Amino acid sequence: MGSTGTVLRELRGAQKTSKGVSLYSRYVNRPAGRILAAAAFRAGLTPNQVTLVSAAFTFASLVAVALAEPSWVLGALVWAGLVVGFAFDSADGQLARLTGRGGPDGEWLDHVVDCAKMILVHTAVLISLYRCDAYRIGEQRDEAWLLLPLGFLFAAVLTFCAGLLREQLGKAAQRAEPGTAAPAGPVSRVRAVALLPADYGVFCLVFLLLGEPSAFLAGYAALAVVHALFLVAFLAKWFRELRALRAG
Image (tube, rainbow, N blue to C red):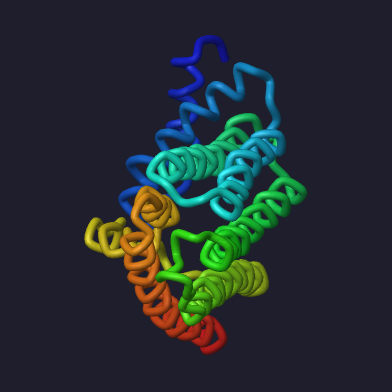
């Protein structure tokens, strides 16, 4: 492969399916990741190194959320860092497929970083709510708000773990009995729109509201409710799918 344009064309042919992917990931994060993957390829980086770059952007942003006083500037910087980290998270898999250098170690590292990200993003919000004066009302702090990131954390981690387990059990069933996998259906734009509130890239937008703590709390609480509803829907869907595999 020669020029960056050639690498980008190769990457376009090495994309995962768009089924079950929100519009943000399909039209924003994956294309951004494709550009970063091409740059990483030209720089001679490995997929695992790209994963670590993703982690560096993400974790640095979350440390800022936890330790700095909320402000509009902080919100913009945090949002930018999280979005860049998310794009690199897409780039590592694209680079692995392009170079054929992916493997169990890379998949494991990617999932570990993803899980750490989900835990730390809500932990950072919890720490911020506890320690920052911006969330005080006079001399008082409404400690009930501290339950919000704990609930959001529960929904996010359970969705991640249950979805990952559903994927692995489905693959195991297919290996044991070829032909048990459901045929791939068409990509639904309606579903892609419906999944937007559950997309991590959309979630990152709430940090742009850090300059107005009440607006941030309202947006964060709304997303927490949405994620809880998605959790219930996903659990019911995955359970039905796995039960159908057993019946088949």
